[in-house]
Length: 213
Image (cartoon, rainbow, N blue to C red; front, side, top):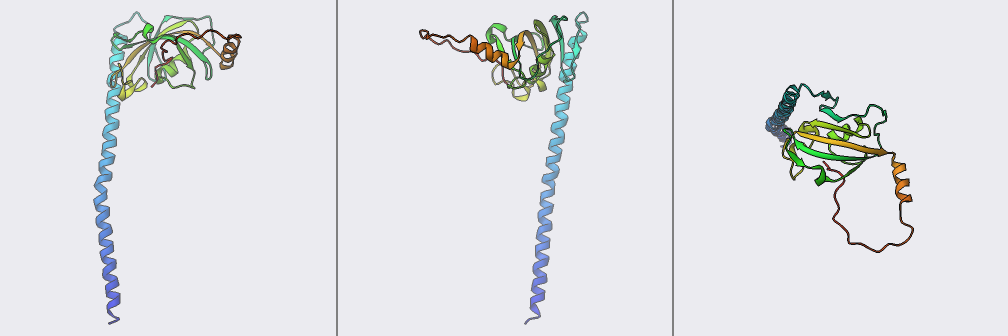
């Protein structure tokens, strides 16, 4: 009966190999489907970006009297007020103080300047819309700049879950009132603290300093 053992082992090995082959064959369509899905998703995103850029370029073409500038980050901007005498721009760690108004790409107001209130932003150290994060670093003090942001550097697919919708390009008007080094802001805050207790006041509702992503 010993001669049966090699045969049994051989049969078990064949069954195991066939099972592995079937398992691998069953997995292959899933892998192919996954790769196909990723490619289609990438193609849709490219088409979306191209369509939004075409709309912005058409706006620029229809306003020949306005001097637009193209950024390296994929957005456009133009000046309402320009400061050519200063050379300094906000850098990482600086505290930027600015006003902001947000419109859709056709100019309809989404968030007014009065609604948002004064904005305070720690440059590159605080979450903020990607386009603004870069755009503020292009500005000088006392400049007002209009930024045309495609959705992929604004709020993208999700919007802001409030007034800004899915894949929405934005026109953001920014006035950079001032910016100071972070340490200078801390020193200024320390020196302006009251030295004597003051009577408590009813707290007013606070506003967020920035529109976060």
